[in-house]
Image 1: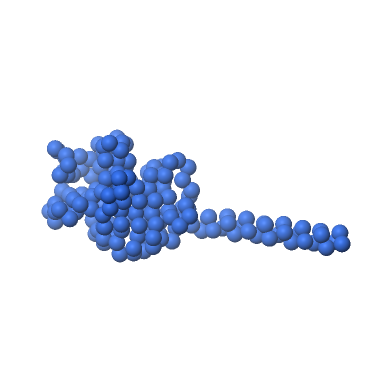
Image 2: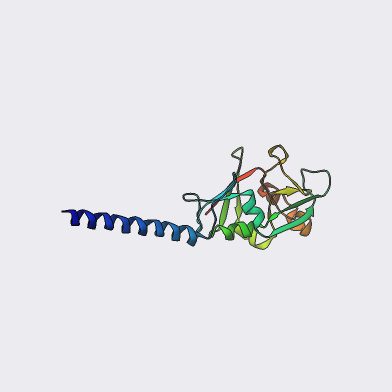
Length: 175
C-alpha cells in the first residue's frame, strides 16, 4: 500500500513538472515578454503572439524597446509642424504576430476607427509615444497616437488618413 502511495505521489510530481515545463515553453515560444509596467496597448484578434490571455499586451517600455522612428509633420490639429516619435505600426503588429487585413483601433474614450493593414506596410505610420520629444499625457492626445507622416506624401493629406490617426489609442484588433 505504501508503495502504491509513493508511486502515485511520484506520478503527480512528474505531471506537475511536465505542466510547469509546458507553461514555461509556451511563454518562451510566444517571444513576447510580460509587461512589467502599466499596460498602455493591447493587440488582439488575428495574432500569434500572446502574453495576456488572448491578447498581446504592451507597456511603454516594451513599445520603446522596438526600433524607434521620428518624423516632423503638420497635422490638422496643430498650428505648426510637430515632431512625433515611436515604433512603426508595422513593427508593433509584427511583435504581436498579426496576420489580417484591417485593424480596429480603439481610443480611451471608446472612439473606434478601422485602419487597413496595408497602411502600416505602405506608409511609415508610427505609434507615437512622444510629441516634440516629450511623453504625451492623456490631455495631450496621449499616451499613444497613431500618426501618419502627412508631409511625406501629398496623398496622405486627406480626410480619410486624418480620421485614421487615432489619439489616446488603447487597443488594436486585427481582422
